Every structure is written in C-alpha cells, then in structure tokens.
Length: 254
Image (tube, rainbow, N blue to C red; front, side, top):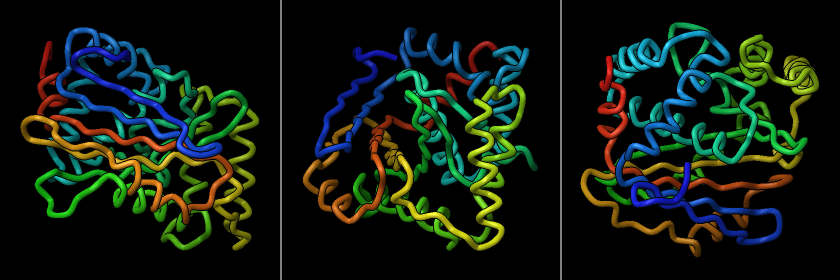
C-alpha cells in the first residue's frame, strides 16, 4: 500500500514514543486492489488454501447480515489490518472470529513488530453523525482498550486473543502465545494488568458519502491523548470514501 492518487498516507511523531498515521482513501484503484488481493485471505483466515473468490464471497455474506454500524466497524477493522501489514506488522489474530461467524474477538487486533507486541482497538462512524470526529473516536477506542485490559469489560479479552494467536494458520510466535496465555490466567484470578504496561494502537475511521473534506485535527488529538496511559502509542486515523468501495471490490470476480 503506497501513497498515490487513491490513498494518501502521512505519518508524524507528535511527542516522544507517539506517532500518528493519517490515511485518506478516496477510491480503490488497481494497485490498492492488488495489495488487498495479496492479503485478504491471510487477514481473514490466516495461512489457509482458500481462493480469493471464496474469501470475498464469505466476507460479503457476513457483511450483508450486518446493519450499517456493523458493516462500518468490520470494514474499518479490515483496512487497519491492511495498513499494519503494509508496515510489516505481524498479525497474531484473525479478522474473523472463531464463533458464530462474528468479527468480534475481544481486542480488534494483536500484532508484533520489531520484538514488540501491540494491541489494536478500532472505532468507526459516518460523517453524517452530528459532532463526529477522529479525536472522539480515538478516545472511545482507548477507553475500550483500558476497560478490557484492566478488568472492566464483560469478558476476558486475553482468552479470545489466546485462541486466535494459538491457531496454527495464524503462525504467531510461541513467545506471543505464551505471554497472552499468562495474561489470560492472571485475568481469571482478577490479577488485572494496567494499560501503561502495553504498546497500544487506538484507531478511528470515518466514512464519507462523497468527497473527503475533513482533516484529522492534530491539536484536538493531542488534547485527548495527553490523558492516555501507555508504554508506546501509535494512532491511526482513516478517512474513507463510502463503505461501498469495499462492497464493490468484494463483488468483483465472484
């Protein structure tokens, strides 16, 4: 995935150990579709011998069962996985869930990069929603991570992450699987971790119907993250032109 007329990517260090990545996706041109083709099976099912055509069909069937908010959430997660893979992050999870064909998996993503583990959480919405902004979605993503890690959510996120990382087709490092398992066992005994022990990637995606006309407000984002706790922090803000871009891609060659 590279900067071109259909996708614009900027990256900036906004404070020590804090980077912001801003993506604007106006269309899916041939180069971007080719990159998706190379990654869609691995993102969805890991190292499986499933055709791109069947993978598209399965994803399309899943998305068609969801309401608009569910579709936006799943599609935004897909493009976050795609972006992280383009930056050589190693995926230690599946986009698909292991139960009831759901995309829900505790955390939205667990990754490794240069011997560091990273936890991903994504929030998304439509530009038609009054008052929507990247900085508010980032705050919601951060709070979701904090609540999950610190034992304030309704389930054990580490257990879900463990089952994903331990799948042979995911091919996660043994050290990652063991670390997640230990965190899950701690969680079961109410020995909850603190979010400042982890490298985190809160993400925001806003879908536009028509041209993308927003700018991720760096000042507002800084005001939000000043209260964040973390070991290291990566921020991803995606402005994407319509969920139909992905639907149209999925319908091709099916």
